[in-house]
Image 1 (cartoon, rainbow, N blue to C red):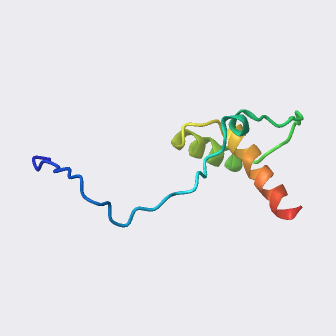
Image 2 (image 1 turned 180 degrees about the horizontal axis):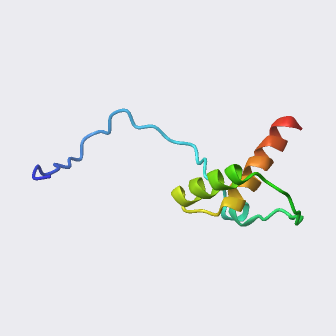
Length: 76
């Protein structure tokens, strides 16, 4: 990037105000009550979630929990 950026005091063209769509810190800190369950899953399902979780730097249990939450939300 050898080309320098030239700033001016001229009018800003096509400026738009973007609505604040990010959740508040209170919403981010919210934690739903959880119930511990034991469930048997196929080896292939667990392997899939472990692989995907590793790719996304998260825990596979969280991915499974989120999948179930989305499923329930769609069918309520």
